[in-house]
Length: 462
Ligand SMILES: NC(=O)c1ccc[n+]([C@@H]2O[C@H](COP(=O)([O-])OP(=O)(O)OC[C@H]3O[C@@H](n4cnc5c(N)ncnc54)[C@H](O)[C@@H]3O)[C@@H](O)[C@H]2O)c1
Image 1 (cartoon, rainbow, N blue to C red):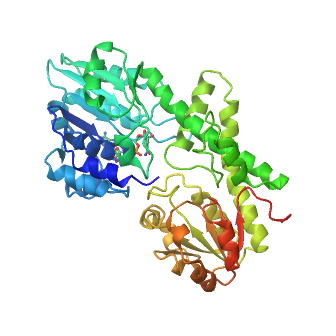
Image 2: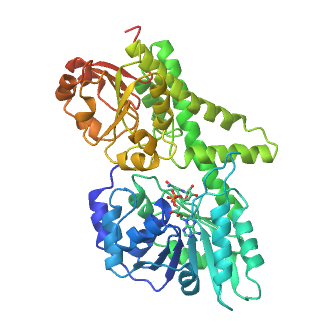
Image 3: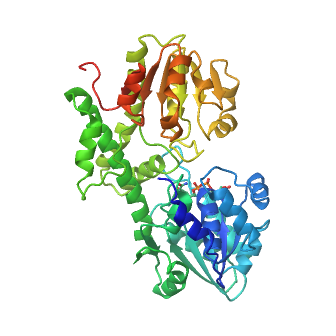
């Protein structure tokens, strides 16, 4: 969904002023969006990012990553004097009563969360606590249930003789990359997890004017709500991917079937889109985490294991489609449209295409990669591919199809829908498209003469 223009302008012109100073630790996707969002809401925000390269960019008003509208919001927030990026976390801990924790929680090899960044943040806070004050720590990172309690325990362990009163709340983040600014101002719900009701009023002061219901729960419930929400979204995707597989065998078109299912209000059409599997920094990680938590508590995670397996198998599905379309892959030129895990972001974390690339290279294909925003991230994070003679990374969608044998679409940027199909047809050696996101109009495509395959349709019988 594109940020609604009028809504955006309305937000842009309502820089409120409030008397609360808020600290943010960690200025990645969540921390930076929270920083500019709270600055727009009128709070004075001090943000600290420990990655010096990122911090230096932020101080100059440059977003280290692509997110629609974020750059403009960042500059405006800094220029208004309501957002500053600081060099020392101690300043933020001393000056702000409310401190948001937005550090990463990557997954370890054993499929449990790596709590190192949260543990470090707790120790840093403890080390710099002033005497005799109250601090309210708000955990925004996605964490295993019980984390807020641990966070408080670590601070109390390390604070030594300081008499500062600490409360830890859990207010999970539900923003979607690609829509993060819109989502900040228009959340569906605000979950406030507290273990001490005395801070509820304090926290609702921050959130009272958001257009969403505020739900007060315990910290552990808030942490579980976030994990369970992501597990449910992952389940919805694997569910429709499964239905899409059976569509291919039953001569049904998944697009008709998903509409028929999704129009039921109890089900809903969102996240009911077949594809090559979910990726990103959240769904795969949080699904793995929930599986580990179930196992730790000796409950069979059979549902979530199935969701994960279905997702992992999507790469085989797309490989089979490529093999069927090309017959022989070795020596063929394969264009891939899509490196980020979805449209609207340059985030390539856990993008399904990262699994596809090495398989295709091993099969002897030559690859041309294109993505409207994610090529730089890809080059920086996978420098080995930049020097691989079998891979070409291009910044131009038309250049990406020159003498190509097939285009494989792996994410859902609007640009693919607006492309000049006649030109694409002419530039390709063999005009074949595999649409891994069912994003193109199949009737229009066929008129141009492409061989076109999407997900959830049986082409052999047609
Ligand atoms: N990205 C999303 O769409 C999204 C949505 C909802 C929730 N989340 C959750 O929010 C958390 C953050 O995600 P993200 O995508 O913003 O991660 P990110 O990696 O983009 O950002 C985390 C930032 O924290 C910084 N950091 C780590 N330790 C620090 C410290 N002690 N002091 C200061 N900075 C520190 C890192 O350098 C990094 O820039 C994760 O738990 C994630 O699961 C992410």
